[in-house]
Amino acid sequence: MRFCMVTTFYPPYHFGGDATFVRSLARALVARGHEVEVVHCEDAYSLQAREPAVETEHDGIVVHRLRSAFGMLSPVITQQTGKPGLKTAQLKAVLDRDFDVVNFHNISLIGGPGVLGLSRAPVTLYTLHEHWLLCPTHNFWKNQEKACDRRQCLTCCLRSGVPPQIWRYTDVIPRSLAHVDALISPSEFTARQHEPLSRHVSIHVVPTFSELDSGPLRNLDGARRPRFLFVGRVTASKGIVSLIESFSQWPEFDLDVAGDGDLRQELQAQYGEYRHIHFLGAFNQPDLVKLYRQATAFILPSLAPEVFPLTILEAMACGTPVVVRDAGGSREAVERTGGGIVYRTNDELRNILSRLTEDGMWRDKLAHLGRSGFEACYTRAHYLTRYFALIDSIREKKGLAAYREG
Image (cartoon, rainbow, N blue to C red; front, side):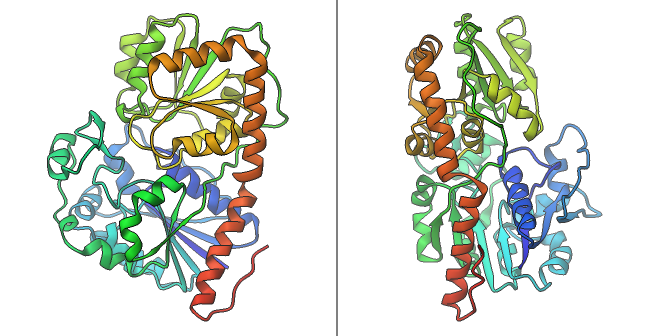
């Protein structure tokens, strides 16, 4: 089959887990013998990037990196109009080809809702990596200071530095979703959040997968100093400020912070003298395996509701217990596998970390449950089985022959 993935960011021009997952899915499909093309907006990356991206191998994937003669103006026009704008001709040149499946991902700056009508494929999918269809800031992080408690979008945009989008107050999103056969939600939580849109398009829960290969599971040496790990964007909505403040008062624990973001330099300057807090910067995904494997546990302290964090699955794949704040879809993999603990307050977090440090048998039990749960639910093979089942059901509903992958 021939697939096209449409997304704003794609490695190495990216900042987070959505682009990493698109690449993983594209690689998985190529490994099964399918043809995959990816189209993304390089100009959108330039809006936020501090450093130029370093090109990587495409692994048999055809990658179209869209650039406009007007540079960063192109994604700005898209953000304001909800349409592909200056990228229209380039997108049509790709999407007019004979694809069997077009899968939209993060479309915020590559075409907005207007890009959905450009698919000509028999099957058109849209994967919900963020809450962008519902929230102009993507993540329900209100006024750049707290999780959203009620809709005040105009005020929030102004306080968050996001230009208000007038098109959101029209029917453009429902009309655009009419071109989509199904929304793919990585979590039950995210599916419930988007339930108002189910009048326009069906929503199907297909949990994300991780392709990290960590090798055999091993137990940590109980004599070594406890070392905890955060992986992700170093930004306020991830709860990183509260986490580092807490660890500054807990010198008995080491904390590794792997990732970059708008708060990294500020926090590194503020807490640089704390020898047990280590700012490691950004890592390529395969290089994270060593960090996960040497960690006593992985911590995700998000304050904004998560869709379904890929980092939780990465930790479980490496046999590392996870400790997550109760925020949106973060708890689902933990509850399904038993491979971690959900907390709500910093006092609860401190007690959990102390027990993980003192009770090696409990830690090892969580590690084994997480790893076995990952293998039972969140591998590439499990995802592709559900993915192709959805594609087949759509084709059959349209009177087309099912592909019957696998």
